[in-house]
Image: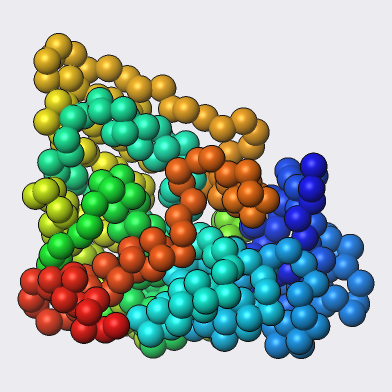
Length: 424
């Protein structure tokens, strides 16, 4: 078996996740040979785990890419605003890419990366990992074999989760669109992509409503300080009290690591972060400006209608209801209920067994592992599946997202083709 070599640019949570899967579960397929990461603790972790020499560890991506093509592909898992430059440089250096979603935070940069990949003949796989989950592949199989007939409508819901919202989209890296990107692009390009993939048709028109309504200063409890550790009068009842989420909960490695920029932080590290960064601020007093709830209406070819809801005010999870001319399908990604299909002719509801991959499932319902499985086959020329899109297909789903945000911000119905032509 050919082993693919990879360089990692950006060793935060996502970069660490992908390369940990490579190391722990796919060592016969992948080998990380270099890393570029400005934060010492994260870079040192990758160096130690992958046994990298000092001259293959960089604080910046530019010197790494100046070495030319030293591996088969590059994993780019930097923050959104730092996707474009290393992606273009890596493509021009001859690398195929595994690029964290979104492609980039602006329409122009998404277009630029797509055009560069096509010009240089590079394969670019975007980490819209829902495509690689067992549950959505099973749903796709049901649609493709005609179990539902012609799709007429889909209702799809992404419950972001109230705690996840405050960690990532209020206090965290993606709370302010000027530092990252709009909420829909960052969090739910997954979902627009999966809907377009399931339907298999062009999106014609979109409309959207949504705002930041709750996590704002006007909703701060009376007497609440800027930082939770400064003595909040509501600390016993507030679900967002930072010390409870970040210090007391020792099992929540994700929160503790993200807030401190350390792989294995101590309580002292976490407390320092809570006193000196937004992770310790009152959730009603941060500089967040992305929406906390949004609804989208979409019209696809052949009169297929779609509603998509993204909302922070829930426990979290994804739920889908697909309505066709022969039957309808319900599914919950969190496993709270099985995939069920109701057949109009027999009037029977059946449970559909999820077609599972062999091996470890991992995060995102198995999508993190699934994308690496498929990426290996795709990069080695042996891929015969239907999950991996060409970069142009990923770009198209991003174009739809940009059109949706145009509709939300202008309060209009946006014609997707006209929007794309206007921005081409």
